[in-house]
Image 1: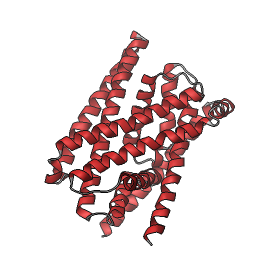
Image 2 (image 1 turned 45 degrees about the vertical axis):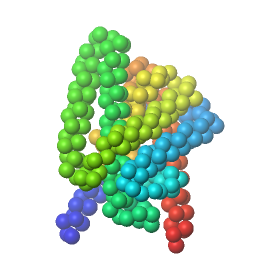
Image 3 (image 1 turned 120 degrees about the vertical axis):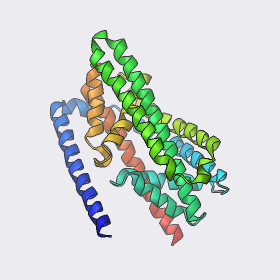
Image 4 (image 1 turned 90 degrees about the horizontal axis):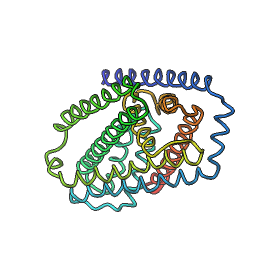
Length: 304
């Protein structure tokens, strides 16, 4: 018990230090940018922000459909609407707390207890989380490959950047292989047998993640930032990669903004556009965190 308390305290301090470091990075970024131009670029979104908010809805619905496939394979029947609601809650907790998916997934299991057994709930959430990890790795890999192709297309003198891009792809492959090796023994035997269903869930979560790419492209179009669809794929892969590497920074505050600004700098485009794009994405995330927390309160009220 004492070891667990000490471990939680260490994690808390790491998260606090990570948050401070992220805020410092964000402050340094803002100090180097034209704040007036950044705000002007942000202002161009106007009512288009509602389109950005709306684009997240089908993503969560597809995630709920993917989760329902898993439960059906396990012999359980839970409505897509219920799973959609629980998915909203889980993702809100994932984003709002330093525990990341451990917090949201644990809560999802708890909320599922009124619908099915604890064992089945845990199994379904484990498979669902792994499908998200696999689809995320695929997006990062595609983004890395596009980055390498993009670097070579821009200039042959960027061989150094290209080499780094290739190295990133190799690292992602190594991490992915070790992740699969580490996760496989932890998956219940009956869950390993659902290979066909698991492939379907990966494809569905990939489809859901494609809405994040569309979100980046839509925001860039609304604020008149010059971002191609391939750039949007790269930026989405970059977001996932930075979120994985800097998981100890709550919300990856300052890290994601630095990644977007850095990519815009590499493309030779407005740094303020990169900052505005990352800010609007973060605003969208905050909106859905609030929606998820309100959904949690409503769910708790129904149960009491």
